Length: 233
Image 1 (spheres, rainbow, N blue to C red):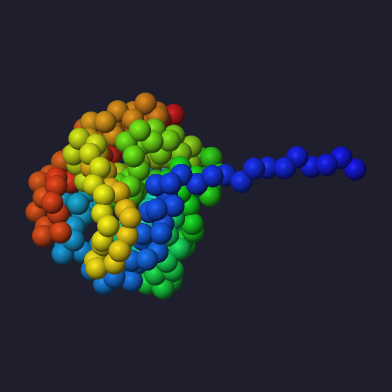
Image 2: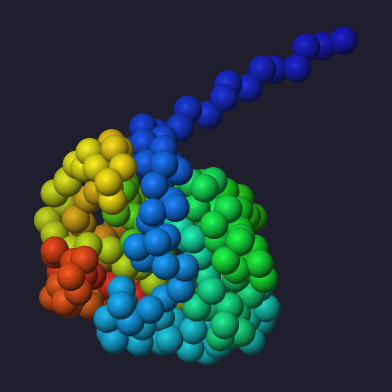
């Protein structure tokens, strides 16, 4: 009998491992602070209007691509997933934190949740009709955003809408050793909106002009950026 070739296990990037560990260890207090639903206490009027516009863009997609799921990528406890599901979309939430996924399943039993990385989603090519990355790229180093763009392009059908939200800056890193009273080792990146837009465009997306608003909430210390795009043909 010929021997089967051994397959080396995929090595997980350090920023993914540290992010998972940090959110697994803080999921309960995170939900106490931010909740399990999109809310006016956390999201500004503009933020919620952009999510509503995303729902409209899914509905305005070509008829042959409407039937399918929309992904909340980096879903945490399913706040965006629940928002989209309440508006009639078939939604699946992906996250690296198993504790966050458990909280999402408990809060939103009608929504599907599964473990997945921004750069390795457990779905076939061109199988999603839309995706939202709501503050999920903030732990990805700027130089690795091309991999995220490539994966999103892989999983979305042509013409599918994408909405990305993140804290705006010039790509600087912010390292934290404590979150809500819990010790962690967690690095966040304040991405340059034009850089994110360029990387999405290089990945084949048709990208709208980034929208940047000033910090307005007590929990915000930097401008917030939003980019709408469509998967290319």
